[in-house]
Structures are given as structure tokens and as C-alpha cells.
Image 1 (cartoon, one colour):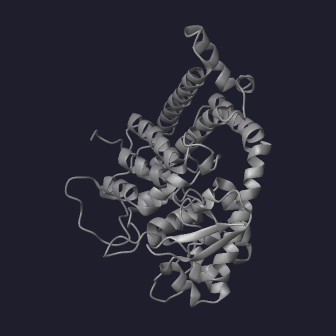
Image 2 (cartoon, helix red, strand yellow):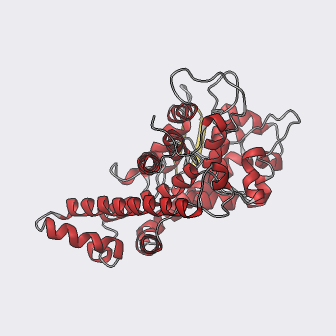
Image 3 (cartoon, one colour):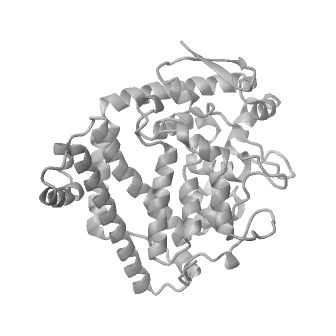
Length: 401
């Protein structure tokens, strides 16, 4: 591994894991984190969770899994160029969406509304619950027992109320400190990936046109260059070539602007990063404005497209029906969650769902109120769901009305 910059995260100076473990033999601690995330059940479930288009609409559209892989690629490239901890960056990127509901942000918003009287739902907190508690694989501890810096990066934002319940990983929100540069990279790699790849998916679906895209400075600046060099290139390859160059433009700018800011401020350690008072991983003002303009364009022409709004309305009804069904009869859930919830009152069930501490010994118990992976999205054509008893082999049967 190349020598790390002085302001990179170093495992020798890490705050470590929640539960002590022997060090790995032939890999770093952050490589171990990455590997645990890849082998987790929650990571595999991302293949059924989508961002803009639901699962049945086509197998070429991005899912949360393919998106996480693309975020990881961008994050690794930036971290490597800046001399930062590449395995840590990769681990954060791969885990950043583990707590997302089906149906993208529409699913989260609906579940948050369902949980309104119990403190709400937020996918970043759920991602932390997944890696801290919900993954049940290891004999010696709950969750994946990830390094502090990985957990810190997964939790991008958090209210002060919730931060007070999270121990060390919540402290920075109370003390108004910044996370390490690797976490900041993962945050922007996420934004770069979904901005550019939603252009690809939206164009493929016929919801946005080449003429509309050319109104965006970031797109048009690359369109002219590609057309000049490849005048006869067909539209499908034209779009991909432009998107490839857009990503390259933004990533290169991000690397150069971040390095400029680090040098200008005189950052020498990760403590300097944490005490900077603002994020230090940034695009230049010009490219950032183009990036934000493209994001506004996607909200206006893709995310708010009538075809997508109709799918959103269907998704909302499914989440509401699932929440009502599971809340009313916890036995419909997998036994590991249903048995716990059945012994609790309504308010306690909701607290379990939010990960509140219910026992003095620190045994946090969680309630999973989303459908098994993919089943909700595969039933998106209906507004009412019947959940039949557990079938032989452990799979529940869902019937659409």
C-alpha cells in the first residue's frame, strides 16, 4: 500500500471497534471492514432496492447495489489521488445505503410519516443499526463490529437528539466537528454517481431527451467535444461517452480543489480535518454550480415526471400497507423480529424499530418493518397487500389485491 498522507485515517490511531478482536493476519483493519460489508446480508439485499426506477421496469437500470459499486469506484479514485485511506473510503461507500428502504426516497419519506408519532425513520441511522446490530453473523458480537471511522462515515447526518443516544459515533454532531476526509469523499462520490447515472437511466427510459440535456452546461460542454471528435456516433454511445467525460471532469476538479484547500489551510493531521469547521473535500465553485444545476434539472424533469410520480404513489401505498400489517400482527414478520415485537406494546415496538435502548444491559433490539428484499418492489402494481403465513422453506407469501 502506498504511503498515506499525514491527514489520512490511520488504523494505528483509530478509536477501534466496539468489541475487541485480534488483528487480521494479511489485510488491514479497514480491508476487513470492507470485506465484512460485502459478505453481509444487507449488502446483497441492495440488488432489489432501486433509486429511481422500480425493480420490474428493467434490468439495466441502477439498483442500490450497482449504485454502491459505482460510488465505491469514484471514492477509491479520489482517495488514491489524495493519498488517503482507500480501503476505508471503499468500505464507507459500499455501506452508505445499507439502511435504505425499497422505492428509494419515496419509501423513506413514507416510512418516516408512518413512524411520525414514534420519532420518525431516517436511512442513515438505519444503516448504522444494520452494521451495529441487525447483521447477525458472528459468535462474539452483534452486527459487523466495524472500525470507528467506518461507522462515522456511514452516519452522514444526525439530529442532536439522536446523536445523544449513539455514544462515540454521535459525538461529532454534538461538538460540531467534521468527519475524516475519507467520509467526506464518500459523501460527494455518492452525489456524483447518482447525478450522472440518473442521466443515463432517465435517457434510457425516454423520460429526458438529448435536447433537454443540452441545456445543462456540464452536459453541453462535453457534448460539443464528443460530437466534434465522433460526428457519426449513435445516440446511445454518444450519451455514455458524454457521461463518462462528465464524471471525469467533476472528479478531476474535486481532487484538484480539495488538494488546493488542504494546502491553503495547512492541514497536517486528521485532527486538523476534524477541527476545520467545514468540509474540506469540495468542488470548485464553477463546477459545483454546474453539478447543482444538473441535480435541479433531474428533480424537475426526471424525479417529478408524471410517470415516476405515479410509481411513487403506488410505492407509498405499499409501504403504508406493510407498516400497518406488520404493526398490527408482528407474527407476519420473520420470527427473529416478530417474536421480539409480539411481547411489546405499540410504543415499545416503535422504540425497538428506532433502535432505542430497552434493557439496562445494553442489549439493543431492533424491529425490521420493511418487506423482505425485493418483495415490496415486485408487488408495486397493487395498493393492498395480504401477507400469508410463513411457508415451508422460510419464505412468506404475498398476495396482491
